[in-house]
Amino acid sequence: MATTVCTNWVKETLFDAELSGHHLFMDMDTKAGGEDKGPRPKPLILAALSGCSGMDVVSILKKMRVADYQFKIDVAAESTTEHPIIYHTINVDFHFEGSGLPKDKIFRAVELSTTKYCGVMAMLRKAAQINVKVYINGLEVTP
Image (cartoon, rainbow, N blue to C red; front, side):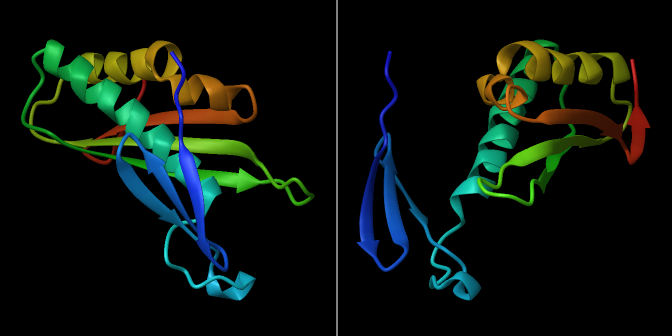
Protein backbone atom coordinates (compact mmCIF):
# COMPACT_ATOMS: atom_id res chain seq x y z
CA MET A 1 0.00 0.00 0.00
CA ALA A 2 1.39 3.38 -0.97
CA THR A 3 1.65 6.30 1.41
CA THR A 4 1.11 9.69 -0.15
CA VAL A 5 1.81 13.20 1.05
CA CYS A 6 0.89 16.31 -0.90
CA THR A 7 3.07 19.32 -0.12
CA ASN A 8 2.05 22.74 -1.38
CA TRP A 9 4.21 25.81 -1.53
CA VAL A 10 2.41 28.58 0.35
CA LYS A 11 4.88 31.49 0.03
CA GLU A 12 8.56 32.29 0.49
CA THR A 13 9.94 29.20 2.30
CA LEU A 14 6.62 28.09 3.86
CA PHE A 15 5.17 24.74 2.78
CA ASP A 16 1.95 22.97 3.79
CA ALA A 17 2.11 19.18 3.82
CA GLU A 18 -1.17 17.27 3.90
CA LEU A 19 -0.92 13.84 5.49
CA SER A 20 -4.09 11.76 5.86
CA GLY A 21 -6.21 14.89 6.07
CA HIS A 22 -3.89 16.62 8.57
CA HIS A 23 -1.90 19.72 7.69
CA LEU A 24 1.66 20.32 8.78
CA PHE A 25 3.42 23.57 8.00
CA MET A 26 7.19 23.60 7.47
CA ASP A 27 9.39 26.65 7.20
CA MET A 28 12.98 27.78 7.51
CA ASP A 29 14.12 29.76 10.52
CA THR A 30 14.54 33.51 10.24
CA LYS A 31 18.36 33.26 10.09
CA ALA A 32 18.02 31.24 6.90
CA GLY A 33 15.48 33.57 5.30
CA GLY A 34 12.25 31.97 6.48
CA GLU A 35 9.55 33.25 8.80
CA ASP A 36 9.73 30.35 11.32
CA LYS A 37 6.05 29.46 10.80
CA GLY A 38 6.68 25.74 11.25
CA PRO A 39 9.34 23.21 12.09
CA ARG A 40 12.21 22.40 9.76
CA PRO A 41 11.81 19.16 7.75
CA LYS A 42 14.85 17.26 9.04
CA PRO A 43 13.93 17.47 12.76
CA LEU A 44 10.49 16.15 11.80
CA ILE A 45 12.25 12.87 11.04
CA LEU A 46 13.32 12.73 14.69
CA ALA A 47 9.75 13.49 15.79
CA ALA A 48 8.53 10.67 13.54
CA LEU A 49 11.10 8.35 15.10
CA SER A 50 10.03 9.14 18.66
CA GLY A 51 6.34 9.00 17.78
CA CYS A 52 6.64 5.68 15.98
CA SER A 53 8.62 4.01 18.73
CA GLY A 54 6.60 5.62 21.50
CA MET A 55 3.34 4.32 20.06
CA ASP A 56 4.85 0.84 19.87
CA VAL A 57 6.09 0.98 23.46
CA VAL A 58 2.79 2.09 25.01
CA SER A 59 0.92 -0.52 22.97
CA ILE A 60 3.29 -3.29 24.06
CA LEU A 61 3.23 -2.19 27.70
CA LYS A 62 -0.57 -2.16 27.63
CA LYS A 63 -0.54 -5.77 26.43
CA MET A 64 1.93 -6.55 29.24
CA ARG A 65 -0.52 -4.93 31.67
CA VAL A 66 1.93 -2.23 32.71
CA ALA A 67 0.09 0.92 33.76
CA ASP A 68 0.45 4.04 35.90
CA TYR A 69 3.62 5.49 34.47
CA GLN A 70 4.79 8.66 32.82
CA PHE A 71 6.81 8.36 29.63
CA LYS A 72 8.84 10.62 27.40
CA ILE A 73 11.41 10.14 24.67
CA ASP A 74 14.36 12.47 24.15
CA VAL A 75 16.04 12.33 20.75
CA ALA A 76 19.29 14.10 19.90
CA ALA A 77 21.06 13.85 16.56
CA GLU A 78 24.54 14.73 15.39
CA SER A 79 24.91 15.99 11.82
CA THR A 80 27.61 15.79 9.22
CA THR A 81 29.29 19.08 8.29
CA GLU A 82 29.31 18.74 4.50
CA HIS A 83 26.37 18.78 2.11
CA PRO A 84 24.12 16.98 2.00
CA ILE A 85 24.03 17.48 5.78
CA ILE A 86 22.55 14.33 7.30
CA TYR A 87 22.26 12.83 10.75
CA HIS A 88 25.12 10.39 11.31
CA THR A 89 24.34 9.56 14.95
CA ILE A 90 20.98 9.56 16.71
CA ASN A 91 20.61 9.07 20.46
CA VAL A 92 17.17 7.94 21.63
CA ASP A 93 16.55 8.01 25.39
CA PHE A 94 13.36 6.45 26.78
CA HIS A 95 12.40 7.88 30.18
CA PHE A 96 9.83 6.23 32.44
CA GLU A 97 8.66 7.53 35.79
CA GLY A 98 6.49 5.71 38.29
CA SER A 99 6.35 3.52 41.35
CA GLY A 100 7.20 -0.18 41.15
CA LEU A 101 7.76 -0.23 37.40
CA PRO A 102 8.82 -3.66 36.03
CA LYS A 103 12.29 -3.10 34.59
CA ASP A 104 12.23 -6.30 32.51
CA LYS A 105 8.90 -5.50 30.81
CA ILE A 106 9.84 -1.90 30.09
CA PHE A 107 13.20 -2.88 28.65
CA ARG A 108 11.56 -5.61 26.54
CA ALA A 109 8.91 -3.21 25.19
CA VAL A 110 11.61 -0.73 24.13
CA GLU A 111 13.71 -3.52 22.64
CA LEU A 112 10.79 -4.88 20.60
CA SER A 113 9.97 -1.44 19.27
CA THR A 114 13.52 -0.45 18.40
CA THR A 115 14.59 -3.77 16.86
CA LYS A 116 11.41 -5.22 15.37
CA TYR A 117 8.35 -2.98 15.03
CA CYS A 118 9.25 0.68 14.47
CA GLY A 119 9.57 1.19 10.71
CA VAL A 120 11.01 4.68 11.11
CA MET A 121 13.78 3.25 13.29
CA ALA A 122 14.49 0.54 10.72
CA MET A 123 14.75 3.10 7.90
CA LEU A 124 16.99 5.46 9.86
CA ARG A 125 19.31 2.63 10.95
CA LYS A 126 20.27 2.32 7.27
CA ALA A 127 21.61 5.90 7.33
CA ALA A 128 22.77 6.56 10.87
CA GLN A 129 24.08 4.94 14.02
CA ILE A 130 21.24 4.83 16.53
CA ASN A 131 21.98 4.53 20.24
CA VAL A 132 19.13 3.59 22.58
CA LYS A 133 19.05 4.01 26.36
CA VAL A 134 16.28 3.28 28.83
CA TYR A 135 15.81 5.15 32.11
CA ILE A 136 13.44 4.37 34.96
CA ASN A 137 13.06 7.09 37.56
CA GLY A 138 16.21 8.77 36.30
CA LEU A 139 18.45 5.69 36.42
CA GLU A 140 19.69 3.96 33.28
CA VAL A 141 18.60 0.33 33.08
CA THR A 142 20.06 -2.53 31.09
CA PRO A 143 18.79 -6.06 30.53
